[in-house]
Length: 269
Image 1 (cartoon, rainbow, N blue to C red):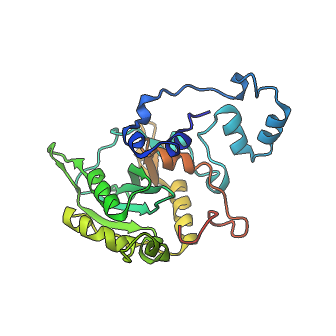
Image 2 (image 1 turned 90 degrees about the vertical axis):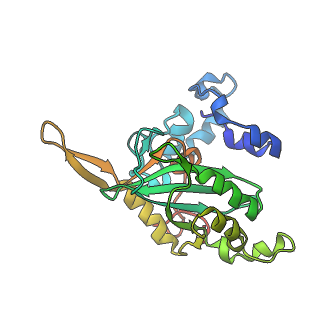
Image 3 (image 1 turned 45 degrees about the horizontal axis):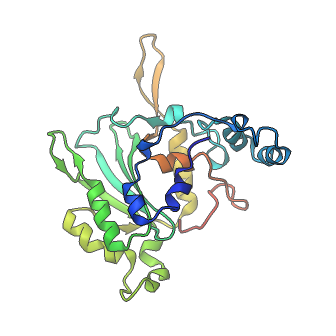
């Protein structure tokens, strides 16, 4: 199984989290068969067998490439994940940021761009926790800096910043101290100063959002032919191997038990 980074991260204090680098830890493949305690434990094995087939095989044998649950049949790491640095993104590609705000629950942010054939690349990830809105905006501004085609470090021209609906309208913000403004309002001065688009609330159409992700993963875009005349295709949505949390979540999310066309969970997520 994979090293439990998320569990380890949540157990750290702030100074430990600041110093934590996942690249300091080597990955080595292992399954329950390598553990003499669990390999023949009937209760453990019974619990493993209770999972859906895709999740069960991932937990038992480390087969994490294909998704179960909501994205079953459309997600495969061998197809949808590209190595960081292997794809060049010219300055004229349309770029935008999307994010899901959280304080106790982690906040996650992503950089996206669109290529000439309409393909979407998600090429960087920011995953953090316990940051006040102003500090979070500073963190986003630092994360947004990239090296341009001339070797200069700068913030790209993002055309949009789509933020989770609750960051604008949730009443929970009022409990975070004397400042009664929304998370978006508190982030805005920092983002404006740094030249990042102001955060706009995402649509509450959860079904539409979830369906769009499935359709992009399933989509194939023809980009030419090989020497034998066979079509060359690429996925409609590709994700960098830098986006560790996104890659971890996609294979595991489940369909809603009542509305199977969408992902389980809050409609404002």
